[in-house]
Length: 250
Image 1 (cartoon, one colour):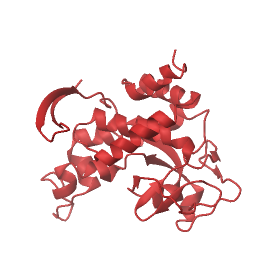
Image 2 (cartoon, rainbow, N blue to C red):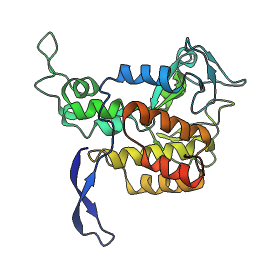
Image 3 (cartoon, rainbow, N blue to C red):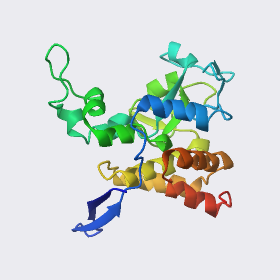
Image 4 (cartoon, rainbow, N blue to C red):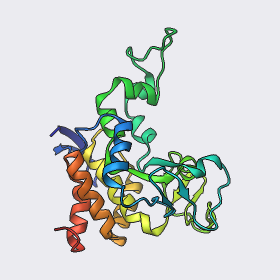
């Protein structure tokens, strides 16, 4: 297990240091492998998309909910994509390879490149974060596309974006359906706890803490966590504790 020294800001504004254990993914480096493992080992008997609860089959063919519409990306509405609840860009930008490039990131014409492709190529820790199974959920492609890298927030008075699917996206923010908020919170807090390079704002931390308390896990969230722990080799302790409190962890 990796260990890091982390700065923590006290309420009075003073800095002090603690030693924290990172409990993230240390086994899966390939995003493609991660998606395959989720398809075959985690979701094979629970093929339901996260935000819209659309059913899909082994061929990734989606049965869209009655009344589902999308303002953009209609072709992607008919395919399954694996959504990073904590978007790859939002943790990727903490890596110098994403921001600035690397000597390892030179294309066949001798030109340097940066961004996601460079982080994937040049940084082991980034590859582990990108491939962490706990942070990946099946989504309708159009929803994944429009959510982009937006943070979650409450969007009062904003209409739903996808017809019968109760997901809102507006003004660079996303309000997810109530039935996803607890899982989103426990995933986000896990990523922030497990990967010290990744930091979330105090506002996001407060919202995620509130959602985790307000929306306890259901049986599937707990079973999903069990399956991922068996594959990836580490627990999402935030989910485990919530499942125990709900008498759903044995």
